[in-house]
Length: 506
Image 1 (cartoon, rainbow, N blue to C red):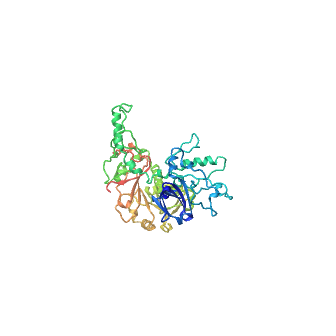
Image 2 (image 1 turned 45 degrees about the vertical axis):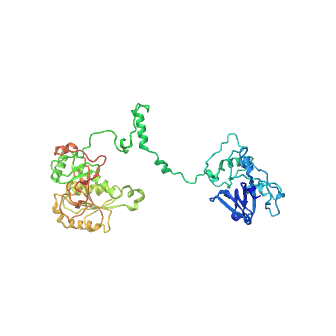
Image 3 (image 1 turned 90 degrees about the vertical axis):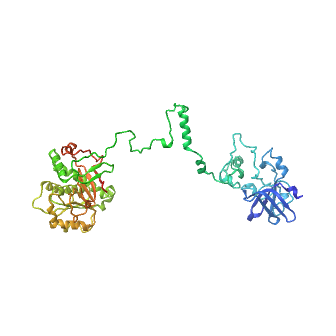
C-alpha cells in the first residue's frame, strides 16, 4: 500500500518551528512511521540536501499535490499549477482545522497573503496555490503579447514564497498572474557560482585580433585598400599630452646663451635651457651699455622692484594669504637696505609690497649724503603706509614673515665693518624668518646673512652656497644690447618674468 504513494508530490506542514516542506515521496516506512522526500523545498526555497526524512510525530498537516500518474498525464496538457484546482471543503477537516490523513485529493501549499484565506465562517473553499517544483509550461490565460522571461535573477526568483505588493484595482488577478509567470522561475536554472569576468577577459588576445585586422586590411579587405592600418601595440605612435606639439619641428637647442667668459657656474631652467653665469665685470658692462641705449637706472629700479615684489608676494602665500577675507592676518616684511643702488632696488620692492596691503618696515641708516636714485625711491616709499626706521632697536622683536636683504654692495665692501651693518645682520639671523636677497654680490663672506632665496638680474653671477636657491628676473634688456657686449642671447623666460635656476654641478 505504501508503494502507491511513491513519486507523489506532497506538502508537509511541520508547524511554526520546522516550517513547510514540499517534494516527491521517495520512501515510506510503515514500521518506523517515517516518510522521505527527494528534491525537497523548505518554505519555498530549495534545500541543500537531496533528501529529508520526517517522523509522524513532527507532521501536523500533509497535503497531496500530485499523484505519479497524474503528473505524467498533465505534462503535455497544462502546467502543474492548473491541475488539481479543487480545494478541500470544510467537511473534510476536523474540529482542530487539521486535514485528515485519508484525504486523497490534491491540496494546497499554505497560501500566501490573500484576503480569502481568512474566511471566518470556514465554509468557502481556500484558494489553491501554485507548485514551485515542476513548473515547465506556459500558462493558459496569458495575454497574446506576453513573453516569458527566463534566467531572471531577481529577489522574487530567489525567494518565490515572497509576495510582491499589489495595487488596488480590478485587474489584481491578471497582474498577479503576470508577476508569477515573470518572477516565478525554477530555482534549478539559477547558477550556483558567479561569472568569472577576469577569466573570460583573459581568453581575448588583443594583439592577435589586431594582427588579424591588419592582415585583412593589407589584402584589401578593409574597404580602403589597406591604406589605413591600426598596427600592433608595439607599432602604434606614442600618445601625446594636451600641451605637446604633435607637429614635427626642428631639434631643440638647449644652449642658446653663449658668453665670452664664463663665470664658473652653469644653471638650467625648468624646461632644460642652459643659462651660464657671468663675471661681475661683464655684468657691470652689460648694465652700462643698456643705460647708454635708454634703459636708465630709474627704469631698471622699477623693473627689479616689480619682479622682486611679485616673487615676495608668492613667497608670502599669494592669493591664499592676501585676500579681502584675511585682512586680520596681513603679512609683515622687514626690509634691510643700504645707501646704494642695490638698496634702492629694495626700497622700490618695499613700495610695491606696501601697495598690496603688506606691512613693510624699512630699515635705512641715516646718512648725510645719499645717491639721487635712493632719495627718489625713499620719497615714493614715504607716500605709502610703510614704516621707516634708522635704528635696529626699532625693528620688531617677534619673527616677521619675510626679510628682504639689500645691505651688501660689490663696490661698498667697507660698509660691512660699520656697527649698524653688524647689528642688522645679527638681528636678521636671530629673527628666524626666511630671507630673500635681491641682486647679491659675489663674496666669500660666510659671517653675513644666509639667504634662502636670491634674485639675480638679467644673467646670474656665480654665487656661493650662502645665497640659497637662485632665481632670475627679466629687467627688459634688449637682445641687441647683449650682442653688443659679446653675448649670444635668447630669452629663457618664456611667459614669465621670474624663473628658478638649477645648478648643473649639483
